Image: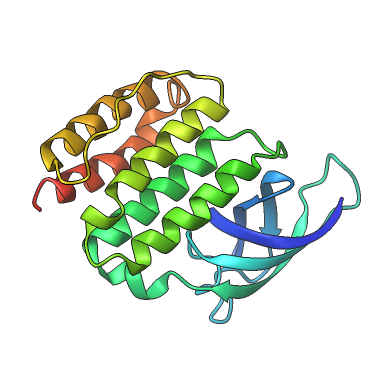
Length: 199
């Protein structure tokens, strides 16, 4: 495997003393798990933050080997991680993407939607500007995975209806793509829901 492409960092896990295993979402290759040497070091730690967009050079000698990646930062989400709502939203959508999607299966619509959603989270003045796009992303993910969930789109100004839809979609996500792993990532969604309720 050899490829070079922009990618969204969706999750990282420590490996050994200084490396990380990162799950990257690429447009043409879907989720790719990669080994990043020095990923916990001073230079790369700010690069492998979930939500960041990186230029990934990925190589593997065989299909059975975990690919090695060299990453360069293209766009950082770091400045928004100190804000409670954007931070919770970024954590949730990247964790959902990392755990729900199968590896190396392309989902170009999800890549484009996640990229746009992360941009919206970072530029909108409040959660009211990105709550509906977040719900749309969750619906798209369910549909791309083959779960046709009927959902009524709430009105932009009806915050109670938006929260109601958020709750009903959460049940569908826990029931279908996250059925056997929901405890791993639903805590991130619960935190986001708790913060959205304070608006």
